[in-house]
Image 1: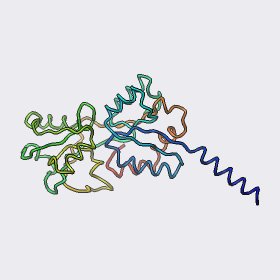
Image 2: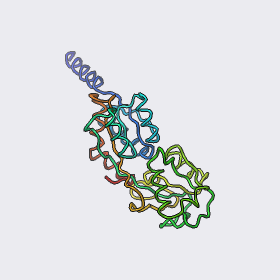
Image 3: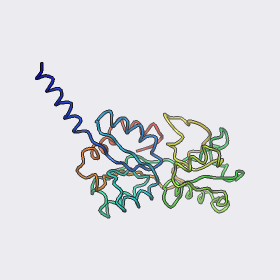
Image 4: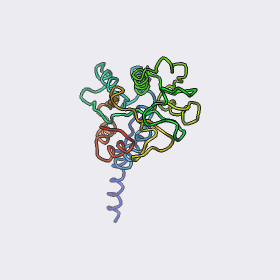
Length: 247
């Protein structure tokens, strides 16, 4: 019996020793699905994802300045490709984990019509977008306004968030009547969670291909490599799809 206890104790210790943490930089639009995925990842593998969320452009600068992230889930495909080319990302590790969708959203039911005509009417005080210089969803919002011919007229009404989370917060708190946000922030399990929205047609803005990459700090680290593998699995992909993303 004593020998059995020793075996069980060694097995438990081995399992704990194998578990590790991975530091992940995650684009703000992917906050909600990543919270769910991180919880599932820890439960299924024993590894823990330490998640930081923010704007893609800001993360690029932090990574280049030595931030200790091991995995980067970007809001675009250009930034991970750039990091890979510059030697800050592991070559061959980059892949598309989601294709994002842009939505014009208001916390008020019935306020945004299903064709976005509210933008042309312009009868609102504030329109929220993420900083287009650092956030791909903000840049997409600018594209849409230019295509609709309302960019110049709406400029005085635009309020910018540092990232898509802050842009969403401006609208959800009523500081802006409407705003361009990520569909994943207002959509779950096939339905709009609240308010009113226009899901912008893909033809109106550049494809938001969101890539993940193993950063140099994560090379050879089991938890980092396990997370990237987990993101490609059916369980994680089901979560991603439930928040309105494509692949």
